[in-house]
Image (cartoon, rainbow, N blue to C red):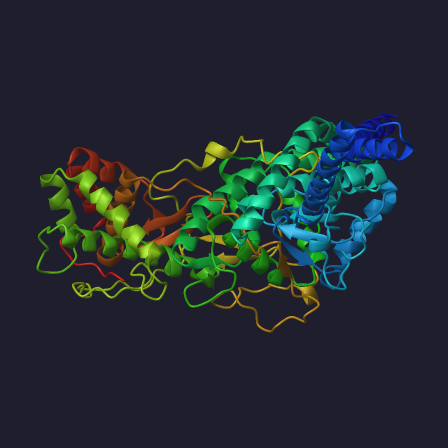
Length: 635
């Protein structure tokens, strides 16, 4: 009864939306109707005279102008390309088990199955209508105008959830295809999407002056209609969601409740992985090619730290949802590249200045390069400001002496910001942030050997609190009823310099582990996959940049660069090593073999920058055996 009530409410609101379209059409036809009456009156002799003749000409001219304008506005609304979520298309040949599970779920819910499946680098899932002519694939599954919507699944779900959990949380989403198939609801949605696309059309950069003027006029009319239909459209979607949720209660309802208990955990882990681990790599011109596998390790570490892993071991024996993919490694790489484009604005294709990096190479390729690049930038800025250089080369002593005797922190921070902006504007091949030679950087007196993998888990250098997000339960709110759940796949691979493992979420069938072993350097695979299995990215031609964090302030840049110089000194003179923490990103590992975390360096750095007091930092350097007077190796 609840499902029928929600469906009836949605249909009623859909009719209200369509009535807005009908009223707009009536307003456009009203001058034409009045012109017909005046012309008919003249023919019959009932409306004669100079005044009526003038009225006929004026009204007829206005009717023609209004009709032409209405036709133009209607054409713009009909042809405007609605927004398309950037996704990775999953062909049925690449995931037959996943398609089979979704179709079985649709049959149990007695609704039409989705027309296709796509993945997005986000912790949510929804249905997306792609029947617009601009979104149809040539000869593909989206061609029919009346096709069912596409099921978009958050890619972290496939690696973190078990198959049963994924089916349970997708049930309310798939149930939404039932109301979506109703003609009135489908027509109302198409109308609203057309209005929304027409409103956004004037902002397109490829329009000429004349076309932009017409687009602005059409956008103004579309905005009026959208304002009139907005409330009805929102209530229609709520009705559809209520109907889908009610219908989905008959399928895996108890399991869905259990799976959604870990929504906050999954969202927090994915957010921390992107902002703390992936973002530093993106800034260095590297993109982690196994983000979905990494989120499993991040969530496992988060559950271990916050003691939220009750019942966690029992889930390891269940089938991971990524087992439903034929080539999970290829899919993970495609979604990782899409995440880098979406959240950082990276290039569309890998290249010399935009290379993939796997988790095994992350400490050396990202962490060590990040520290040495920032240390080199700090010394370049000191050189430009005329700060006296030490004869031995770039040393930490130079930085300590300058901050303890000069009060120009703001000037130095502004110079660092300007230098970073200059590097970002420079061509990739000339940007000094990538790999600039440093003329005044001789090799250190002794280079420590590579540190073996430590036995203890590393921790953040800056002393962050990884448990702060553990209690978060809010995520991107959609009316699809999806959730996020937690899990782990049973084939972890060790990560050098971390003492932890990166769960690659492989299939339990040894013949289908698309990324069963550690990926080759650069994130590549051993052999190219067939074209039918290779995922394709859609909707990524003009990606909006959705930055994960606001730009760093000058003071934050200064602290990061001084911290990087300290880490370089510890690595080159005290045998420390760069490491990776799944929740906090780059870390410094010190001790025997570089395996013990030291998270207490941040107070010393802040005391040096803000209070011009080098003693806390000197004490920390002495405690780890670092020698600030020795030169460090810069990139």
